[in-house]
Image 1 (cartoon, rainbow, N blue to C red):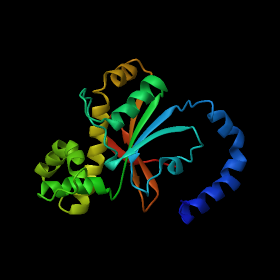
Image 2 (image 1 turned 135 degrees about the vertical axis):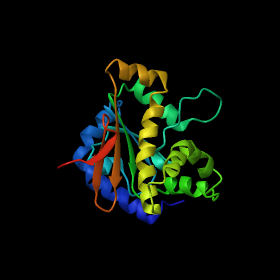
Image 3 (image 1 turned 90 degrees about the horizontal axis):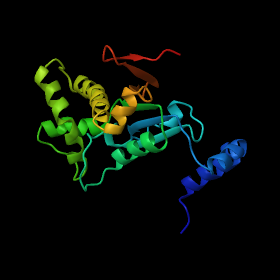
Length: 211
């Protein structure tokens, strides 16, 4: 079976351009990886961490899922893909930075809001975004977001904060953070503007990063 033509074309361009320039780096990476930073981002095709941060191969350890959600620490026999990635990044790769990065017009966040109106979306999406039920219900109970767009953006930001809180429920994350070996950050990306907003941990507010 042949590769789809659009993927083959992209691969050919990669071999001619990026790989040709960075062949030595790829050979070094073939021996192992040592990224300093983990990015927990959304699976959305418009929000690629490596593109946003202009990262070279091997610089970022990235895990992406629906809505960039970090679940709380749980020890059971279920499947914990994101938790496994966090464990490997902190205990194996010894990253010194984790960034949880949400974004505008997130479909997973929209699914959480839809569920509040008894319109759950998807067999697997609906139970996944239930991780946001508490913060979503808090938002809706306040009544200070009058439009759907305002509720969407507010929950996108609240989701990042909740994921950072959930990261600290993992003992190995909490220990590394307490010892000054790991810093946790939150970010939110506006797709249309190409603008990254960074979370001020003290004020719990997001502000555009200046360039």
